[in-house]
Length: 551
Image (cartoon, rainbow, N blue to C red; front, side):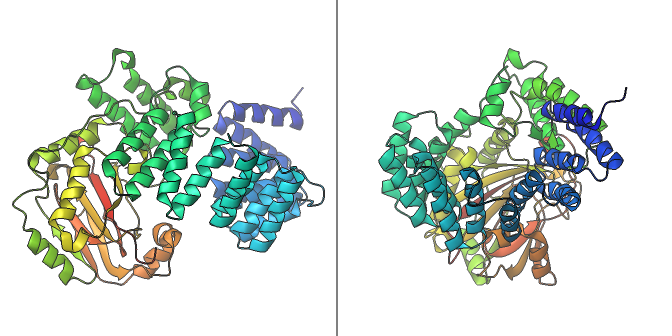
């Protein structure tokens, strides 16, 4: 006897829970095709896309389910959640309102509705909803904490602080409320008060990587870079060290640990092979690169349609404890006598930059040979390239997630000393590195939240198969002052349309070449065509100094 639709739904759900998303999606799709008036197949497909962290695709399936049954509350609520992720907050509010009976619903539903209303700008309605949520939750400190976080996310810092303080009055040992209050004070510029609260939390919970990371950012904002870097590295080690054989711990630390991409897996396999050949890996990791290659081959054979991939249970079991983890960290120590090339004409560089409006200068032979080699070793051997989320063929590593070393701190200090007219008033506020696949696309057009950008490349020239490109395109057009970070950093089509037709400076890729420019200038990665292999990967390091005007 053929299985019933209910049995097939149960089977699809079981496959989904096992991480066999392609198989589950096939069953859900078959049910949707065979029973076009039953919304459950479409809803199942939406949940697959939620598991893949693709809310846009999930919304399409949820819309189809709601066209069949507009009163399907689960679909309506998940529609609201996905729309929130997509920042379509007005539409999210309407969906939450349609499935929430505010007089009798579970208080947690009020919390979601209140958050959505605040995010959509309905401040009074959102505040009233959250007050109702706290009251219906019997003024429990955890409810006050949740309400505070909702205000916090909406940028209503005074209201957030008030809720966190109320929670702490009722439960002084509620560390999350203390940490979040510190974050509010930090955002308000009350750094000494925030630092005291962070340190109180760490006295009780020394293993809290998020607090170490927040403290690092606070110390960075105080221009205490060495202390900040130590905090960031401590946070990275707490969060990113491998968890051998403990898949449950991996998923507990990061519920999205099964999420990956082919270009991230390939980079990790190359780094493991590179480290193994140099004797940098422990004997326990012998054969680990081969396991990555097996998983890569399996995923490629499935012809994935999205760059974000969810590993199945068998794949996760093979590489989950080490995927996206700190397998090795090579130090990059300071260079005696300085990291910058002493033959550089710093007065000429400064004059050239200031003569442009806004400023831009290209600097060749940027670093001493010893400094360049140390940074190359650090980037090739350190498995710090944790970010793979964007669709281009690159992985990133950011200062707050552990990217940095003594040499880079030395470099930042030297730049401010040697270029005082440009950088004296602008402390380092952010730093990252990107490492690229050989031919995939790079960073799309954007501006940055800073006063001055420094971008430099450390990959040998012979790796670049098109010496006329591979660098950076800088438009002479500035992002409008009224654009916020989301607009000038993430809305790619709007930014491209705005910059289209304006003059641009094409800075071709050269090893040890740096580009110094005003951070408000729109810029993007040029076309990339590099040889394959880890040592040929295009690597750029970026430092941001100061704050964007009006930030």
